[in-house]
Image (cartoon, rainbow, N blue to C red; front, top):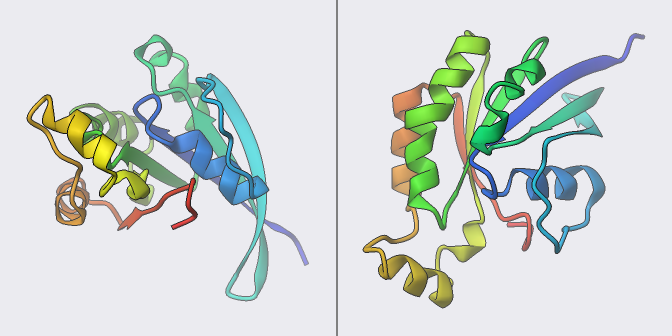
Length: 165
């Protein structure tokens, strides 16, 4: 029986939680220190419908400095995760302003999952206070679902890599 291999590429603004999500999923530990990613690959063995799947997780850099390099990660992908941070409404805006057009250009027809990261910060008093200073507030689940619908995402999910929510 041949092994099933699938490639998942994760994109989104810098520091929105992409790397932590992948590390917790693949290794089970939360990285406490932020180190910006250029490119990292992780592998997770998962079971889907009773079958073993080797899932290659391709982490990408969200910073603009890497806009010309990031497309090299897209070929042969099977699914795309577009991430934003619940504590950063601007990162949700960028899903529509930047990420969906890049993904549609390089990965037309692939399933897209929109992921709201850092869900644990939605009700965090320090986060709320910081956002209030700029007349913002954390992203609501309804706002995330609305953007997912607009971009034609297959699914909308929220998580916290830190608290494993």
